[in-house]
Image 1 (cartoon, rainbow, N blue to C red):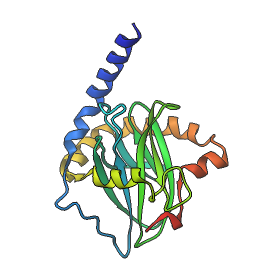
Image 2 (image 1 turned 60 degrees about the vertical axis):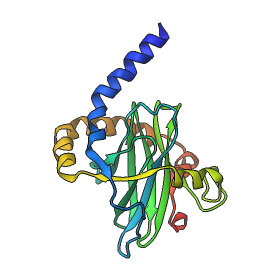
Image 3 (image 1 turned 45 degrees about the horizontal axis):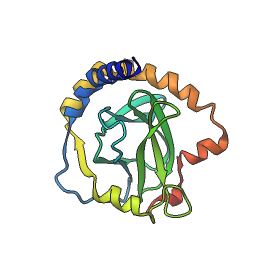
Image 4 (image 1 turned 60 degrees about the horizontal axis):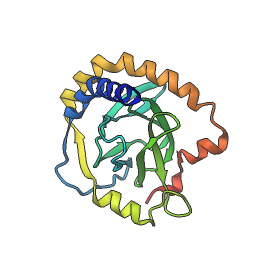
Length: 198
């Protein structure tokens, strides 16, 4: 019975989020180029756990969502943003968040991993050193090498998100209130700091 319920839930998720996977295309180049006036955050997804579940990525600006893209397993998105403090949301079967304080001209990395605590996917900072998720690890080298860079089909994405915006903003409001109850230490584990950029 549990297997049947899991199968039905997974099918429901795929029906509701699967169309977003058609909003991405391979990037013209696998090279990630930094920008003098923008920060670049590279969101990678490489886990085969829950790989059938779609994940959508958003930047939260003044409490409103801006759609970054869909992130299937084995792919990455290089998101350009203005420097400063940011909030990012990943949504799979639930929403989860990452805070960022980023600087222009720097490139930052985040691994979007399954989070059994929430049932969603946690965008998690990757730090240069001294972290569970570090750029010095073999895992990081594998994530960079084994993920393909994708980018939005802009016109299709705008149309899709216009029809979904209200739904996702309700999801954001529900899960952000939960995230805000995390301790300062828990939030620090989910924060990209200025010095994490390369």
